Image (cartoon, rainbow, N blue to C red; front, side, top):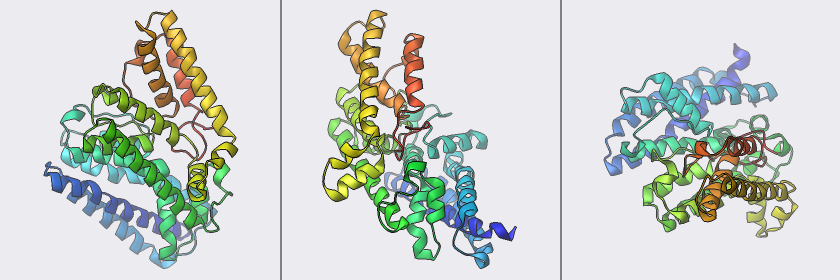
Length: 356
């Protein structure tokens, strides 16, 4: 068992950090007085103490993480963190079984977007915020966040980084130090999220709805604060902003980072995935718009184009937000967009699927 102590020690650290991250929705709940403060107090206490006990119990065996430690830690993190992520949900919603809460947290952290909850419109803002904040944490990867912090605690993070990131990025460090690379990716991620939030607010969403959906879009997760998803707002500008930022989130964040630090668009021109990415999406939008018009799915081309463009981008990038019940479309259209979702997002993005 002692052979696993280094990985378990780092897992304890990750759990503690995860507990501290719950402080964000706790603060929002306290400021808004939405009734969920106690749920977060309980969640933070249990999470932080559990992580602290695990960290303290394995501290004597600390050393730099090796390859097998990295893989073990990443796998354990994705299984264990949803246990704690479910705590505020279960504490606030008494009728929610723990298995359902765990499902919701797994769906949040893995940016899957499937939900077992109903009545989202009536939930406190902080609860919906926590749901999409889990998307955001898991989208870039809580592991990559921790890698940026590990050197401060005397723990090497290179093997952990390599176990977490996509294969094309494993040996392509953007900076000489892995921790600096992780920080750079997270800074880029934060900037894109902030830009998305302001754009949604400008497009017509209220402040907290903009924040909640910015987390969901940047992490390409799909949770919403509304049962009808983005369709609840019936706002073309909001839909266009969602499309733009879903497309950006579906690109390699390393490319975004290089473009940002070098202050040039040339990294986008050198990324071999980008031309194929946009060509397939554009071609699919045109193809499905024509196909749906021929099959009488919509009354006019403008409406068909609006729904097709949104759902091709949303499903293909694995975002999953919706403005229309696309299960009413002919089966070919449904299968095609689901097929795109299995591979279209670029490596190094927050998208799902096997990626390009």
